[in-house]
Image (cartoon, rainbow over all chains, first blue to last red; front, side):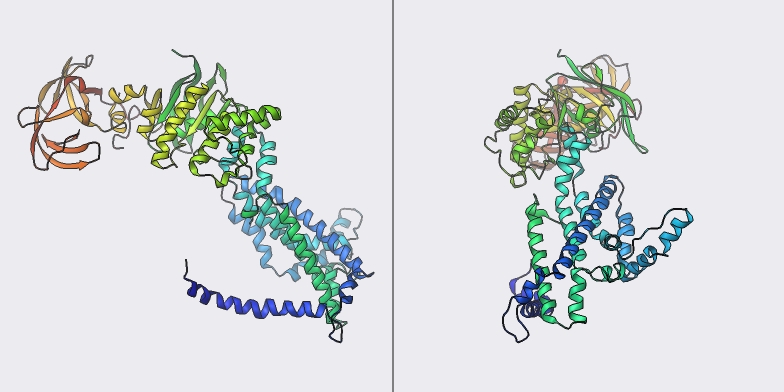
Length: 273
Length: 356
């Protein structure tokens, strides 16, 4: 559309931005990660991840992120299926239900969950009114999972909704025409065609869940440390940039590997959302 | 007469306040190529969808082989569809698309492999099994859609304007192919189109529809040569339609002059629509023919000329292989057997939208 010279001019502002605030910081992080305090090249800090304490945090981070992602997928998929099946235009409902929570400060909503889940919180008060036993959710893994699901569900719903609504209704009629009942149409046509959306959703929920430190700090009560909390502490309490950066690098490598693996399962690579 | 396969009985369908089909009575025979022809919005696609099971009629029923299938879902009808936009499964290759139906039906893999090969040969795409459907041309995708439908050995194939997305040359080619596949497989074809040329050149019978009503059912020659009303006459081919009065059997009065024709059975002094095809009008020197006039416009179409002649205040359309010049005085001559007399519509329901 644009001539070469024009294209370069239009790209320049972003290239400057990306260079200054994405590329250079990335180099710094990697540099700090692979050097020791004297500035010599060293892989010791990268190897720390296998040490007790760090590894535990890494493991529990992956586990909680996985559980949250699965719960988000299980909540979002049937919902999107129903919303796209209707003949009406559901864009308004979608935006009300799922974009609106995004406008709300996530710190605020996480703190709200704190007051709901704590020992004398809203949830337990309601349970007591109903003569039911108390729950002990605050400062547990489950509280963190609830916080993650609440905060990241919209990122699962949106790509899934888009990929499901992109499926041509004629194709579903073609499947019915060729003898498939509702279930067979779902398994053979809808499900495979929605995989690109599901993959985007999984990536967009899994990564922030894996790296969060706010949700785990507020709902885990500082007892459950995720890898995000460890990195935060290295920077803000220990002032050890080398370890902090090394752990960040490990996390980045893990995420990139994961994205490669998930897209490898995508049957429709070219039209991924 | 061939055996009846499908019968529509008093079918009507509305969407909201909009009546799309009414009083539909139609009998479709085994192995025939029948075309539903009409302008957009005439209800032809809705009729096809009712036969396919994608819509349920408000009243009336669909009888298939003697059984009422009105409420049977599409997956349980021995009917397959070729959709307008092909609707191939983009996540499957050619072979997987074609074997979709037989797989659902639980056929053995040997059977499926043979059938896919046969279906691809039928549509002239041998060896395309592993191709990606999204990378095929429009014409090839169309053929795959046909193969995917006929591989299930349906009793009936529904085709919803399948050629409208193809370019002219390809469309001509596919017309011939479709007729061949119809004869070769013996599957009943129900073909929907708004293109009268397609309808005339391919069909055994044509169902002309307008505004939800069937206007005429007949062979292509039948609906072209003996249209039952002005809509059919006007929609199929070009026509000169003139108000006339039937004086008595075999005599019609046009523009105050009595003229011989071949139609009988109308009441005396009955107002009628008179239809004369533009190719049936011969141009002659002034005073030699029945009507004198002046050439007002000439358009060259390659094979023939369209010539407009104004005579008796009426704009005649004439098709001729020889050209004329604008302003030339001519006279028009029509053989009595080329004058088609049609009853005027009794009500709006019977024949609507003369202005289409």
